[in-house]
Length: 341
Image (cartoon, rainbow, N blue to C red; front, side, top):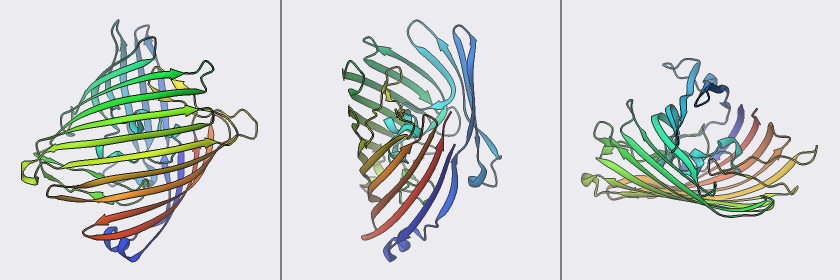
């Protein structure tokens, strides 16, 4: 469960660009999960999400978030159903374990979809690979691939170096595509937005890297989308972020080799673990004849990992948005309570 409160304050230009951003509390996520083995070669996973405060008129109070079966084969794990896509570290890795509160690269990624995925490890769990086919509903045909490597891992696991490359093909839906993103706040409006425009498909490439050394870690990703849209001069959009983390109490994030992702911080003391986080990111949706906006986001935050289940966070973020030859500034203060079991 994730519970948030976000407070905004804006300059006049920002209000003209995106409207007044209302301060509000939110149940960011509340899920009940069931998982287990059906047989020695088949497992299941299901999660039910509480839509509560974010309920729209056409939504039930509970929604099915994940529902899939995983089959073991000699070559790979085969997963069928609604699940995470294999594109961008932000989406593949558990959101609750990230140093920052919210993702940045959402304009280029889709969290979950109906599909089939093949994945496995290689080279004695020093590498992973995954491919998937998606869009068996109304989301458009999509394909993804992700390959990761772990060039360095210290003997005690406190230091490691992760690299990854991801690919995504995104087919048009009804002959159009759309890219849009929020300023690291789920309750904010979409600050950058191309609107729907005539297009055939998009080829997206993402690079990911993590350096972990004791209590210090740095994360970075860069995504670029090449869009086949002759009427809009085949635009190219991009986004990136760099995150720095320092666990003041000395703990470190381990590495989950099976998924090619970082683990959560586990406090070593009854008083918990304290983490300082800073981040800079940018999303640019201006290219060709498309003017979706360009935003840069600065972020600083503190996380208190009370134990392996509870985390409390406070963060300040500032977003500079360039749109229609104007520059607006939006500030935000975010508070979070997280419980994961």
